[in-house]
Image (cartoon, rainbow, N blue to C red):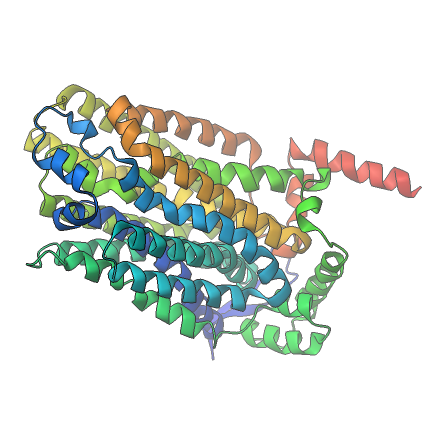
Length: 508
């Protein structure tokens, strides 16, 4: 059964349709995004709940409730509290490098399954925690799950998707992150009202629901054609699968490209050594730059600590959680819009629009907080709502630009022989800087105060300029033919082209 959307490659090279089989498989795989988003949203919410703080972080609770001399910007400054949030990303960093050989040698499915299983165990441990060490160990298991899922799911989506709809389908990963965050914010808003102070256990334990779906679903989805060809000599099996997911029997052109890519891939014994070669320099730069820039947009400041940030400006506990729900709706909605636009207008256009939008809104938020919020007291209700509105504008800008495209672009630019290694580098860089931002933000907020928004706004300018000059457009380009965009780019062709000339000269 297939949805009647006929597709070909940009040059009419590939045939096929967007089939229901692909849609359902990708929806299940995208649950890897839901578990990631749920964790981001839930950790930010529970760390603003007073019963949770009183039980696990009493020093923070005391500063918040009793210390009238401490600055508004410093009430939540605690390395132990930030360790609760950031320990996940340290575990994820190591897990993604472990996931790379698993994904390459055994396929995308096993990595997705392992990610779901580890996250399931972590959610159970977190919900049952009776001391901070048990809580953080649960976070480490969650990190292992996220590390495996973030390494394998974007690859799975890119390899299953038809070229013309690859952007929309892969943006589904960020959309799933947004949905996970929104659900988490809604659950936090509800559990905060539970009498007895144990609602945080439900918040942490409910992570088991998407983790269970991912773990069980991974047993039933098909492996990708690329992975089948890479790990088996039975090309007929891959052809049958390709015919099924494309909804046509005429898949020989795409199959031939996959086989050629696999032959090259099998000659590479050490992909991490391979990716540092000159011919892969553009991909390596993007593997590092894009996830770095994605983290220094400041989005995780909003995602992790939005309830805390809203409480800093004087909004109550329940209202701050409700405000996080609003930003969650905006984020998920804007990412859905990105899914509709990315393959029509391209990646670069969305990067540009989103970058300008984020910069302007961050400057305005910083300006309001600098002029209206001192070390003590709170801002007026009108200015508090203005800050929430501006943060929603910022979240929308991220939601249709750096949010989904920060995962889409890296997952589609690698040749098969470096694809698993490249994705691991992307995820690892993301985890490293997510950890740094998560671990330092509350201290930076204490010292920079409103200047924190100008700090991240400056980085948004840098990344927008970088994209304008150095990132080529990749829409509608078949994933196995992606290397040509670098050879045609005004800057990268000097590096990749020179390498090709050296190979030709040596061959002569």
